[in-house]
Amino acid sequence: METKTTAAADARELGGSLDDVRAFCAVVDFGSITAAARNLGETKSSISRRVTRLERRLGSALLARQPRAVSATEEGIAFHAKAGAALALLDDATEAASEAHSLPRGHLRLTAPVDFGLEVLPEAISVFRRRYPQITVELLLTSSTLDLATHRIDLALRASSELPDMDYRAAPLVSFSVRLYATPAYLAERGEPSTPAALAEHDVIAARDLMGPTAVSLSNGRRTERVCVRPAVQTDEPASVARIVLAGGGIGPLPDVGAAPALQDGRLQAVLPRWTVSSARLYAITIAGREAPARVRLFKEFLRERLAGLGACAIE
Image 1: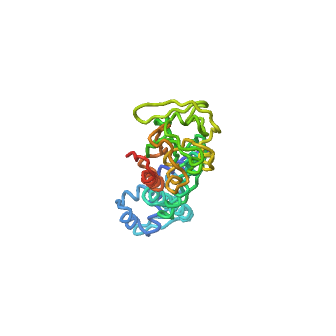
Image 2 (image 1 turned 90 degrees about the vertical axis):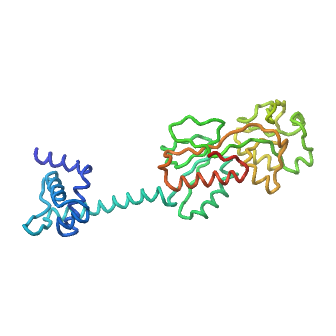
Image 3 (image 1 turned 120 degrees about the horizontal axis):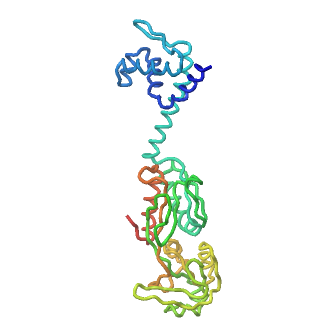
């Protein structure tokens, strides 16, 4: 009983002796210790010691040694069949992991705020996939902060005025400003405010995380003005601000990178363009840095360049 227990314990330790298993399989595959040593770049005595050590751990003879030749025993043939297959799987896994770091392929699991995900990411992801068709994308849009490890997320995009406090790597991609926008139709009907104080005469769409319930603060770089307003609509979801503003509901605060597409095609118009509601940065949060897979590193750089093209200031 003690001998069997010891043999079982030794077998469980084979995870630390893969080179010994590989040496034995090479002897069987190439037909001799000499050929195996040549293929693995070791000496004959080194290969022989590895096989002997493996046999001792298994408590079973794997090779029948003759003066001029070696051959696998019945136990050796059975062990080689399973061990060889396991080594092939391990080699495939190692190659796949190595290629993931250098080749643009695989599945990118991405999370982002709802407003950014609806306004900016659809076209960006489409262009990215045309450039890298072997990368598939899964997009999780939520205003909640998801843990990367728990939800198996490769990359999280988060907007903040300062570096987030977390256990993961946070790299700033771009800085952007939040400004006021409205539709040309709304401004044609109600008139365009020429000063911050004139906002009091307009329908203001208020996002609770950017504006107070009764006032909005605007800055032009030299001074800040606080204007008392009575919001026509209040919401705690930034994505709904864009929808209401685009529907002609009034004047509302939007990130310039999110408003850029609608601004370019004429659906939106900047209001008080020299004044900003706030400024922030967009961060890319990942578990790994330079060791991240190619799909993650490529998307980060692609998004940085694309947002810079929409007017954001890229951060190197």
